[in-house]
Image (cartoon, rainbow, N blue to C red; front, side, top):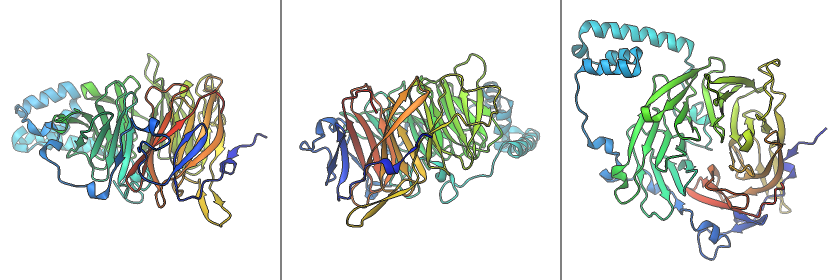
Length: 498
């Protein structure tokens, strides 16, 4: 029987009062101060291009000038007649949306008869839709809310709630507790601060791959797609487009197609996965009833597969590269729900459930979807490492817990390093990985633990993926509960071995 690796196979974490600063040639470097960009720092040549970011509680909720508002507030729309609006909406979005619009208008504007018909038909449609497709509504914050399924530890109290690196340039988006997004770019001193009336409770950020200034934010009311202007007048010229659908709130997870033309959004209160054509502001719902609402969506690096997980034990892998309509394969886990999932090169897919801290590999390349087998059969999923909680103790009887319930998992685009963040541990586990046999097997090797300064806990993280090659430096960016954002470089000469 093949032994499954565990946290016991990791080297013991450091008990010094120092933060883990980075790795150089497999040697872990520690630091005892906040400033990691000092020229005397041993990793300075690998850190100086990344923006220095620290968000404090004093910075949250401060008054901004009018230039922090999006430009949509500065222009007045042309007023068309109500019937012209209804006709245009019928043509562009269909009869149902026109009906809902008529029901929302004042009866004096659309006549009492039309308003009465619209209101009653809308009520009937809502009753049918909620009865068939809608799950029990979740709260925006607190215990038992949507924050239980987001990849951020202690989202309700976090100063930094989510971060996102642009895949093709040195540009970092940071969402904070005050519902603002700050944009940090290489060689730019001006920091755009994005605000919007609909930008409440930001759960995830995602840059459009083929547009350097387009950022999507998953919020309670829907998806805000920002077009960001960099420079002195950046805040005044940046503007946002709100994508929303009835009964599709809150939006907790989004994913861009690698070509940047499609955006997928999901909600734990909705059985539908919404596929947006952002340029046209049009959407198509992809309906599957079993499994309840959705909690996680990921697109493969090549764009041919789309992973979606429900709030129950069902998850699906969609085939999106066929000329015919998308089709899906349905899978289940024994208990809980899928908590985290990542795609790697060659359609390698890894995931873990909320009830079992074991990371599994599901190779999608090859004929694993046997039509003769049960759709609920997940026996082809291969356990690669067990991250059940362990306690490390030093000679002074100091101890630290590592492992247990997994909150977030990030995999670099070359498939070499996997970072895992836990619910009840102050440390991040860093694992070496190697994808073998065209994605059909994944080798793993315990590497090290990443710790912050004394008292710090990791909240969220994201790999910097720009222009990675076999010998390039990998950088993991971590947001700590103190508001400090750390860039953790992994400097090595890759030899193809794990």
